Length: 323
Ligand code: ADP
Ligand code: TRP
View 1 (cartoon, protein in one colour):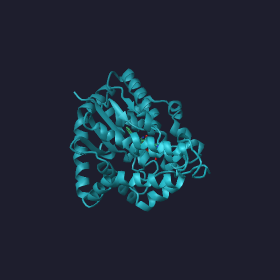
View 2 (spheres, protein in one colour; view 1 turned 30 degrees about the horizontal axis):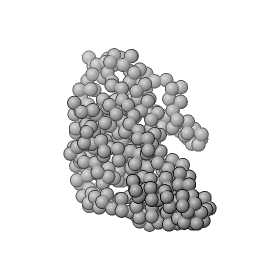
View 3 (cartoon, protein in one colour; view 1 turned 90 degrees about the horizontal axis):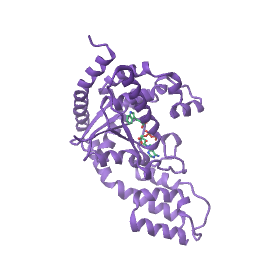
């Protein structure tokens, strides 16, 4: 039996190259060897996106992004979280066995508190719903970027607590995090994130991509100066696109001097544009065939639901609500 992989992304905005290399690329690489479940975390998005036009357009966009990046609906069960509303039922069971201080230790919640925003209960409860997403499908591995590691650990802890309380029910999942892309840096050198305004959009227009690349923060060395590539934000992003000799040549040019930051940015821009060209074409296709996208999600939802019906019976039996 093949192992099961499951992951999801919130439809909260435009995806960037950090999402691609940190998460989506793994989803695509795993689809041949794992029983793969990939979903659109639209329930999670509602903690921040509270406008129906924006939410539904974000959902369709991320579905097209997934497909354009190479997820094959014949190999992967692609669905949206809200079509599997059983997860909210399970989240309730988990709520009842989880303590508030435990959730207060979650990094995402602590970050939100520092920003002193009004924090809704959904945001506080975020790790519980995510645990439900993962555990309902008996996932073996959860491919994510490093920032989601704690959430997967929460899912494990909650599975253990549930199993101890109600009897063996859930498998313990493992996060799958690739070291080289655990934290893709943004244009300012911090983790690339929608929240920091330091992203390079994966499916932006040429102008948007150019603007982001030209905005990468550098020091003030002149073109002639030798440079340490490992200290350069542009080089850190080149590393995602260049391999082998190409990367070595670039590294040498940095160390030798004579390569200016402007030239390095121009090269990076070209690398990104040629890399995304085939994906853009695929995305164009789906933009013109939205019904196909909706049909793929519908089929995926059916499979995800069928897959969990036995599990739901076991969960309800173990909790004691089945008579
Ligand atoms: P953002 O931080 O931009 O809001 P999300 O939280 O929506 O991104 O992340 C979606 C997926 O992409 C998650 O699996 C996350 O770990 C991964 N991811 C996001 N940003 C990065 C990054 N800079 N490097 C590696 N992975 C990332
Ligand atoms: N929390 C993830 C993110 O912010 C999205 C997500 C929701 C998820 N449920 C999940 C990821 C289950 C993996 C597995 O990106």
